[in-house]
Image 1: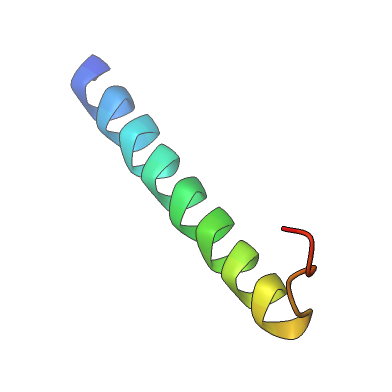
Image 2: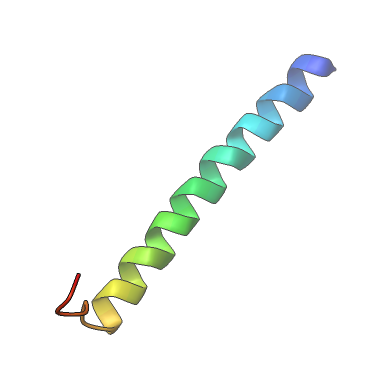
Length: 37
């Protein structure tokens, strides 16, 4: 049972990381990056 919980949390961490990266890329694509950056 503990292994299943650990696996679930690991997949959730990966999913959160992927969704966050996708959200950042879409936001960067919608709004042009600032010239100062």
